[in-house]
Length: 140
Image (cartoon, rainbow, N blue to C red):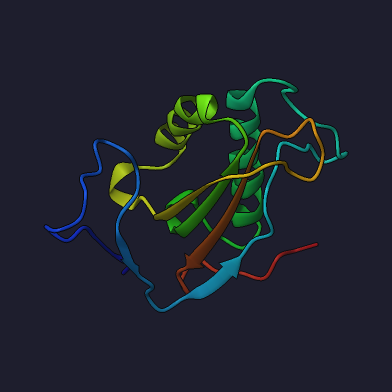
């Protein structure tokens, strides 16, 4: 079982789904490439709308997880790259909708000068640990 914790000396979560520490359990570690708001055809979803793009990022992550028996709750580390600090509330809103407080990963937020194309506003790069009893090889 994954151990997620916040030491008493750490800053408060304030309702945000993250933890200061996550100890990986036994299982399969899944490193994912950064996920952006591209659909399966490579089209940008939500041009100019960071909230819509963040939703697409998490949809893409969930799809990768499901392919091997994983769930969003299996994400133990999440790095988020974003362009505009004004978009942070939209990103946090989507994170709170998609990630449960009790299963929040460790988290890094990085303001970037740009992403792979000018239409992209946010990118998420997760690491997950899939429990052995749920893990299966992708069937593609």
